[in-house]
Length: 186
Image (tube, rainbow, N blue to C red):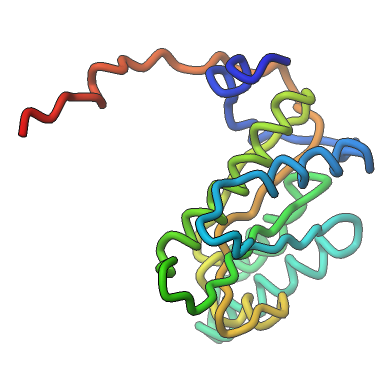
């Protein structure tokens, strides 16, 4: 697939089924992520893969996080939390590792990790792999961060859900460039 085609036509694919990307495809996904812009060459990111029975354990971690915040959490919310990781055969947790640096502020490092996540999405699309970027409350939950082994200087940027598209991809919406670009006149 041409690079511009991937950039212009990538869409989120929320309905994903088996199979997950194979080893060769994953290698390309992560190689693309590692090409993200990175001022200072800090490589302020890391990735966790979650698949198989680990998805169920992640669902339990999510449910435990809800119960830690509200011991009376309704069963329907707990069931939903347990089911979230089951929406795709492979999840990639994208983690920003923010490091003290005199020239690269924390915000740039978080953006760089976001660019790495976007690289994975583009590489997935280019290979015909369905993918969607999700966050939600479980991306910002301290209990989940501890359960996933994040250090104090780390934060979850994305849960990337990857797999085989269940149905044909929707077409990327047409957006007018003029709505978002203007010339600054000084």
